[in-house]
Image (cartoon, rainbow, N blue to C red; front, top):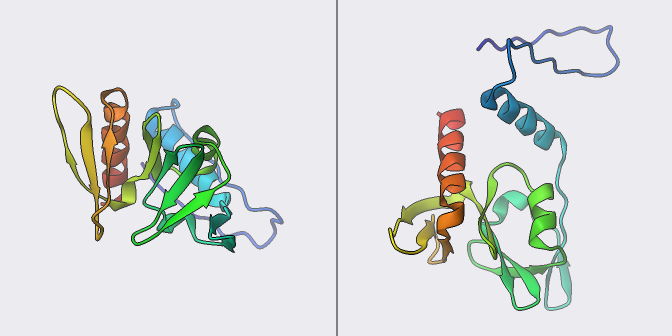
Length: 153
């Protein structure tokens, strides 16, 4: 795949054109990545009646807790006023759903313990926090991790 950037002072709006023989999964991923990079996700987090404006990239994972959604950073937990299915549409591609109750940021995944008979355990860099990935979502997680590794090497 070739990547070329052309600078043209005459244009008013920037445009990205992808030329391909056919639309492959790599091309679709590239398109989604470009689109998501243009959409700067702005979420408001809450803790003790205080609003926080954190970068989404600092979130390790989101999980349901009773009737609310918790957003976990390395050292803290915040509430957020979205449902998980809404977050799936808003969050960048570094986030992936791993169970009915959890969405994780694959950029922070340190290890995955795979258990053949039940769910696997996901651990994160620089924190004691861990979550469980259900067998149903395990393949999607592995694919996203492989995709991230491929594009960041």
